[in-house]
Image (cartoon, rainbow, N blue to C red):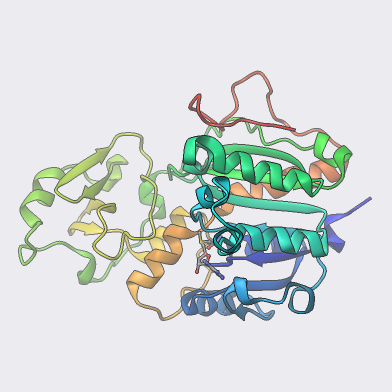
Amino acid sequence: MMTLSTCTCIDLFAGTGAFSHVLAKYGIQCVYANDMEKSSQAIYTANHSHQFHLKNLLEVDVVNEIPPHDILCGGFPCQPFSIAGQQKGFDDARANVFWKILDILKTHKPRVIILENVKNLTTHDKTNTFRIIREELEKLHYHLTYRVLDTCKVSPIPHHRERIYIVGFLDEGLSKRFHLAFQPCETMAPLCSLMQADVPDKYYYTDRLKVFGTVQEGVTQHISSNTIYQYRRYYVRENKSNCCPTLTANMGSGGHNVPLLKDDRGIRKLTPRECFNLQGFPPTYTLPALSDSALYKLAGNAVSVPVVDCIVGRLVEAMAGADGDGDESGTESGAESSESPTQSE
Ligand SMILES: C[S@@+](CC[C@H](N)C(=O)[O-])C[C@H]1O[C@@H](n2cnc3c(N)ncnc32)[C@H](O)[C@@H]1O
């Protein structure tokens, strides 16, 4: 029987290295980490001692550059799968990194795959994209379980972040012992517990900024009342769920989703470290000397650390032959909308 302590993994589209970070906690050694962004290399190598491969995955020689491994992890970029769906040509289809993932699976046949993507993947191109993904993985004999999971429902981290997680197994028995139905987490950390003290002035809004009036009018509650706001291009929206709205990759580059809060000194943006806290990274996770916009982008793109932790925990249970604590009666904390897939085998 496969045991986790002897397993190896690869981390594709590694970004922050969140997958490697969680899997290392379970004793799973990462034997290949890849991303084509230098910012990813900077944060990955600041937190992991093994080699990082800075290269476009499409240019990687799957046979000679990627070692054998047991678990393939990847929060793959969502590119225009519809091209493949509409069969507009082999060359176009090859440009999509999903086909590269399939090449890796064909070559190395990892026993487990853990993929993450935006929730919209399931509805993209009238659901054709997701159907193709499932079919292609199933053709390679993977038994799939997938579910939309929200960070603030499965963990105490107050971040509303719905993502689809697709877990596949070559071993049907293992797949049958695995599921992604989680009991709703009953506790939620107060937002202010994830915020920093002594935040530098540059994060505060002042009357030097054109949007100051709008922001001042909209951001009225102190963070201690568990309220966070979002600047959405022309107006400020209060988040009423005591949760931070989904962090996005463009929040540091004039994007319209900048989370805002009011503290004792005034109204300010979240700092990069606070964004990493909201993604569940520990305070010991090193943030390298990159621009704030690069750090916001890394944080906004990252896979949720506590959600991956829950999934790998389930993997441990499945490998031990035990059932998890999932409630199949429908009270699970995943898929909330009727369009969202729940689980499939
Ligand atoms: C959604 S992010 C993944 C984030 C990562 N899972 C994490 O936890 O931080 C997608 C990543 O894919 C990388 N990427 C996109 N296309 C790539 C390619 N062709 N080759 C290598 N990396 C690529 C981007 O640089 C980005 O870091």
